[in-house]
Amino acid sequence: MYVKILHDIQQAYYQDNYPNDGQRFVAWYLRNIHGLNTVEAKDCITDGVNDKQIDAVYINNQDSTIYIIQGKFMSGEYIDAEPVREVLSSWVLVQDLNQLQDAANAKLKVKINEISAALDDDYEICFELITTAKLTNQAQSDADTFSKKLADNEEMNANFIVVDSEMLKFKYDEALNKTNNYINFTFQLEEGKYLELELNGIRAVLAAVPLKDCISIPGIKDGRLFRKNVRQSLGNSNKVNKGIAKTIKKEPGDFFFYHNGITAICSNFDIQNGQLTVKDLNIVNGCQSLSTIFNCGEAAKKSYGYILFKFYEMANSEKADKITNSTNSQSAVKARDLRSNDKIVLNIKKNYEQTYPNGYMVTKRGENVDTTKYDAGHIIQLTDLGKELIAWHSQRPTLSYSETKIFDIYFTQLFKKDYPAEDVQALHELHSTVTNKWNPDNPMGLNESLLAMKSYAPFHHLYAISVIFAEISNMSEMVPRPSKVLAQLKKYDMMDTVVNIAGKTLNRAFKNANSKAIAENRVFSPQNWIKSKTSLVTLTEALRVRLDAMEDDETNLGAKIQNCCKLEKQDFESRWTAD
Image 1 (cartoon, helix red, strand yellow):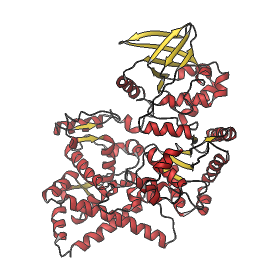
Image 2 (cartoon, rainbow, N blue to C red; image 1 turned 90 degrees about the horizontal axis):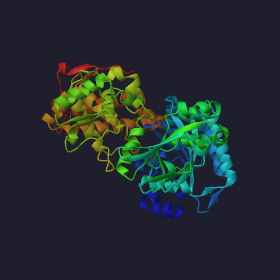
Image 3 (spheres, one colour; image 1 turned 135 degrees about the horizontal axis):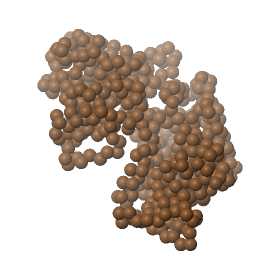
Image 4 (cartoon, rainbow, N blue to C red; image 1 turned 180 degrees about the horizontal axis):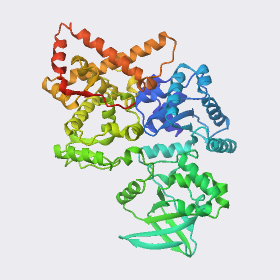
């Protein structure tokens, strides 16, 4: 991997944006493993003087996880325990963010503000040590001790992951969908504790496997066993995994009854003399459980508990993928998932699909839509609709980043069974037009820090469009109907113009806020600003200044904007309370 990465980071992007191979390696990891784009990756890098052993900070709002990354780009085969101790020192510092910020460099100061805000929202911290070498025995011992320390810490929900050369290769191959697992293993079955059967042409074995035998299964530590799983291990400190560990240590005899079991697929299995030999083994559901059992190895070795395994023999990869999706549907259930069958949601879906026969509303995660049957411009995502509703009707794009808040705290205020299908479609079209502008070509000339927040900053852009119509119509305390806004923009052929004005004004508001913070000698955090009500005040004021200036525009653009964006009183309604 060292040679591969060394070759990759010779590309112009890495050479032009990062001063040394250490930073280039971390940026490579952010792009290739975490899947960030060039702007997002650059925004995460904090390496440099006074980085406090923190090379990068990546906050994943979808997974509610803060990744604190330390990179070691090494040509040698092994690294000692020093990097592990550096991560340990960063953990100690993170527990006192005020003190850390006083001594941190400028980029890290910004990220500390963002970490603080994310922790207030109960985000988990994942410390990642990434390296192109392997840990020495002493370093591995220190890493295990550090992991246990985090797992036992009740004040901070955090875990520690070492991505060494072997795991780095696996993760890279996995990202390219190139990994082939050839894990063969023999399980010792106990009489009376397994059942062999055939269902729908597929051979299967149901077996109660001792916990102590699980730690011997290859591929748990490096993740190879879980290639087809929907995610890798979340670490010892994940709340669910802590519960699993507690049961192993305190109630091993009841573990079998408390657990849903492990789903495994293989290309072939054979039972002889009480032994089950499997070929090409893959765990498609149960990564967290087996990883936790492995990490509680000493307790598992001494336990008398069992866990249910379901082995399926199949060569059909399509069916294996369906099993993966189905068996993981109950994992990490979010508020958004629980609302997918809510009567209000189903009523909105029914009304929309009746109004637009060529349309479809996706209410469940992972749901496949037949694009030959439905018009791509009329496929609505429930998650997007929730974010659009809170940005437009509640005038709170500051909350659009949080699915949990939208589908839990504010659900009843946002989703109304009689919400017009025309407004659903209008929000979809307006939002799509906005997001199309947030591309690498950057047609609006947005600040790089704004572009780095592409997953949620565009909702401020959407909000700005509603403000333009409200201000021009002298209804600044009200919210225009999306369908009326869309109709006007199409009637006057002003969609592109208004969207550009809204986007460029957002950019100006962002720059003004940044400049003000610098003038006042304050740390400016883009993520915290975009999540704060201050951003709405700054943006609204910037829009008013822009619109006032247009009234005297000699190109007559001001008159066109006035004609297009002027709505009647009945086209507005009160803001939906969401805070």
